Amino acid sequence: MAERSDEGPVLVFLGPTLPLAEAERTLDAIYLQPSAQGDILLAAHAFRPRAMVLIDGQFEDRPAVRHKEILWAMAQGIVMIGAASMGALRAAELDGFGMIGVGLVYRWYRRRRLALHADPAPDDAVAVHSGPPELGFLPLTDSLIDLQRTFSALTRRGAITASERDLLATIARSMNFRERSLPAVFRAAGWPEERLMVLRREMVGQKRRDALLALKNVPRLVMQRGRVSPPGAWIATNTFLRDLEAGGIDSNLVNTYKLNP
Image (cartoon, rainbow, N blue to C red; front, side, top):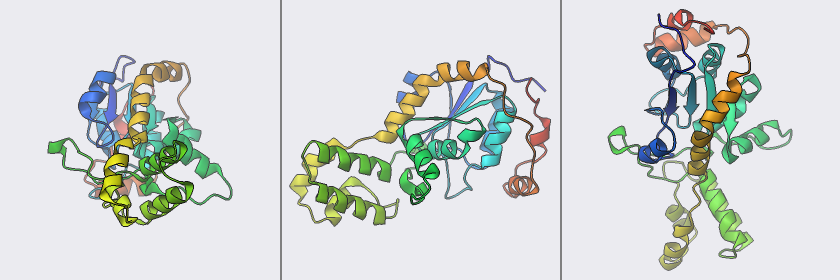
């Protein structure tokens, strides 16, 4: 089997957070669909990458990407970077093990995770409903994090009051992510269409910003992490192996990758 090379490609798991064309202009990489359980393992064997950037992930039709396979990838010397969406969530959970998090969404999840008395950061704060791969995973709704950033920005510039901001945020949090959008929140608040048309142009795309920041910084992050020894030995668990097999993935793949070449 061919060994992983320091000249191997960078893989990016991308979906509705950022248009593919914009991502390709920012970073020369191999772009894959949003990651689900087993995809990191399969992509490592297929492409022998030096780094992977997890931005978007699947979580409805397929099980979400497992923490254990990210740890497996890092044990092989693959630099793992997360941002914006599922990547920010996993990076906040695994940064203590060597995964690199980038951006405000990552820092928000990490701060909420470390705060002793904070409510848990909701996983669906970054979730959106999107179109199929054939349409480029076109986002059909807005994420809670983008909406909350929008409401805060509108308050700072005096377009809405603090009480209106709090009302809109409460309405947005109560919505299912498949229905959550700026127009839907405004209409649920009973705002006139004229006001909606004015304010919807002020949407803050925080997830998009974080994704672009991560892609722009990949070369620097990979170079910096390349000077550091990868995490220690990786140990498979029976649960993880059973999960792979249940998903139709050969669990022997975890033992056939060339470790830290």
